[in-house]
Image 1 (cartoon, rainbow, N blue to C red):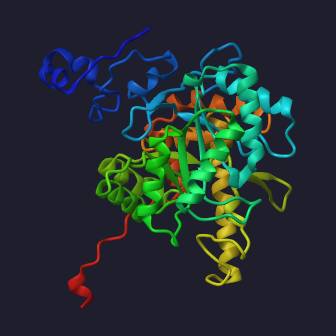
Image 2 (image 1 turned 90 degrees about the vertical axis):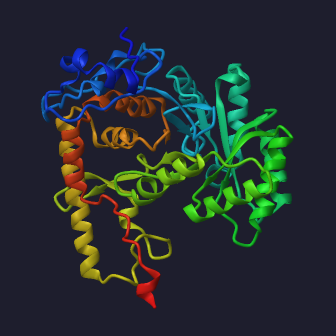
Image 3 (image 1 turned 45 degrees about the vertical axis):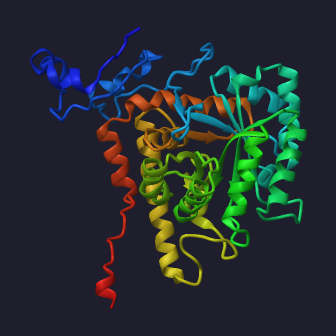
Length: 413
């Protein structure tokens, strides 16, 4: 096993000794990686070599059935806390859907644990209380040590209840009910799903601080909060000496990038809020006129009754049709690129999301063990996503978010 131990001082103070080792093939500036631990797998060593991989020269991703830990799986600190999570987590909303049997759900969870995944994300809003009940049963049956896995669950609203909001009463009752369903003494991270404009932020942060002080949860975070709301919560926590949130959970994939790439890195650098992403598997296959099936984001064809980046009232029919054609063209090009890399478009989407540094944990869902296995093979694709490949993907997508220019208040007067 190769070990990389480097720091800025040694890299800059011994230029004469290291010139031969630090010259890359494309003569780009060398990136210094501050690594303190051995690389877990030789599969990722290409990430440090700086070499580019030509398109179309890669064989299909090999299937590894006997590996105890999936090659490419890493463990990162969530936000600026000390909590170490796998860079791939398991979202349980499809696992406990009506079409998945208990045996299938247990097989998926066991495969996740055997593959090295240590984070399970729950949401009463998506899968109801059944997910927490079934997960609690599987954990008790498997006998996993409580220190070996991390549970995250959300509070705010339920599809099966009229109880909504983030009052102190609702927060405490929701956490206690989740503990009973999970048959656990504590939850690792309680996520507040959506901010409540009708409830004072002080009440929310004090309630979450109380939940943590009682030992019912170790940390708390947010889900689908705006940067302004996250900053307001942090400010209130500092003002009232409460525990600050450590993570924001948000959608992120090739066609949803602005919040994750422009604003969440700023939240991390300023107040230590990490980023847990979901979305690469929230895709569907669309049929073209000639019968061809393409990989497309579900958000491309949403209805008027929902909330989207563009609405029926804002664009006319011709513009919508043109946008649809552009999406098909991008999907076709992404699928062709994935084929050249020896994978499918879904695996390329997962690897692309993980390639971005702000993503500390990417949530994947599955309805079968085979589907999860195929998704995890995307981790082996990471070393192949060289600078050239990433630039090609960027050219195809042509949607890199750009922060709007600042507006002078003097100019508005």
